[in-house]
Amino acid sequence: MIENDVVVVHPIQQHSHLLANVLYKHDRLSCLYTTMYFDENTFLYKLLNAVLPKKYKYKLSSKMNLPFDKKVKSYYTILGLIFIGLGKTHIPKRFLNVYREWLTKIFSKKVARDIRKNTNIKYIISFDTYSYFLYKYLINSNLIKILDMSSIPINVINKIISFEIQKNYNFTKDLKRTKKSFTKKMSDRSLHEIKMSDRFLVASTFTQKSLTETFENAISKKISIAPYFIDSRFFNMRESHNIADKVNFLFVGRLTAVKGFHYLLEAIKKLHSSAEFKFVGHIQLSKEYIDSLPANIKYLGVIDKSQMCNIYSTSNVLIFPSLFDGFGQAIIEAMASSMPVIVTKNSGASDYVTDEENGFIIEPGNIESLVEKIQWMIDNKDKIDSMGKNSYKIAIEFTEKNYYKKVAEIIGFEGEQDEN
Image 1 (cartoon, rainbow, N blue to C red):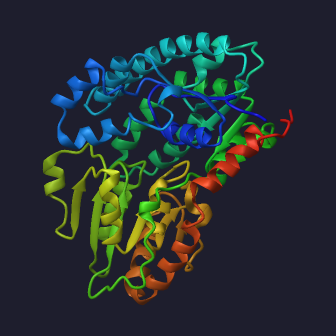
Image 2: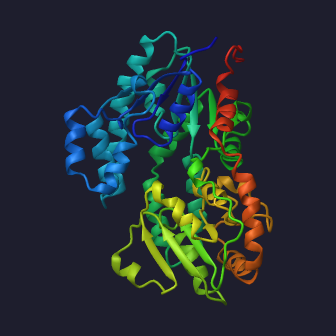
């Protein structure tokens, strides 16, 4: 019987806690290594709990008291907190990247030393853009290195952004700023990290294709697709949206050009009919800019996961116009709340969208197509209920159980021998 042979490593968090919990439930987790985990008996936790605003205390509680507490090793917690804090400021990306590299390097070195001491470990699951140093420190080991790629390779990201920059929109400056943050050094290390990996976990065919096209199918047999699961709280089978007047559209994500925010604003200006739009997510624009938005656009700010169920349940259609996204969790969450979705083909969860069945798939960066599909939803609002029900039927498959089945394909089921 195979037990406790997998370690999960991430210096911040991403979805590593969720993955570790799934492995723990199936007796496969040896350890979760992170910087972001707290013991409520420590001075650091008591200090943070005393000084943090209420909205941050909820996030703090998600980083403690997990079922596998005894299998968590947290190093450099204060440095991890500083990194997250800096990420919420307007510090130049180049400085944040330097700090991120330094933190990842010292964290990886300490973790690698610890892993080498444990002879029971067979698999390491770590995460894209955070595994370069870890894999270097573990070179010549017999461990199977599995890279969990939540996004696409950086070189592919840069190609997509460069193509959009050539269109010379009035928001091109935002695209250039994002592209500048993905330096050549980061891109080179991303490719080297991929080359050092033995296997890959991806959430979508979009990420899979980005990998195989970059490496000319050389790694195609090493890739397993494991779509993320969603919290059961999001499941909401609505018989009717009860749309009395205007269709209520929702955007969830960072309000940046690469997430399609500016493209959506341009599309809204060109609509022939009125509708309501809600925007949820982190924004880097000024308050003056937000105040200048049209009256039918409402910016709700950053909303905790615990409150997003209500946001979805009071919306009719999700718009996810991202230029690239390895999955797009908001898409499946919206579908679970019986919403049709308008997504780009570069959104990973577009794998589960069929035109006119439960939404529409459009080309990324295509404003005219975005206008057309939004207008279709407005003109055909009587079809939103049936499309939403189709979405729900698909979303109910995104369970923790089904996620583990896919993860188990790459680490081997209990009692089975792993094939190299």
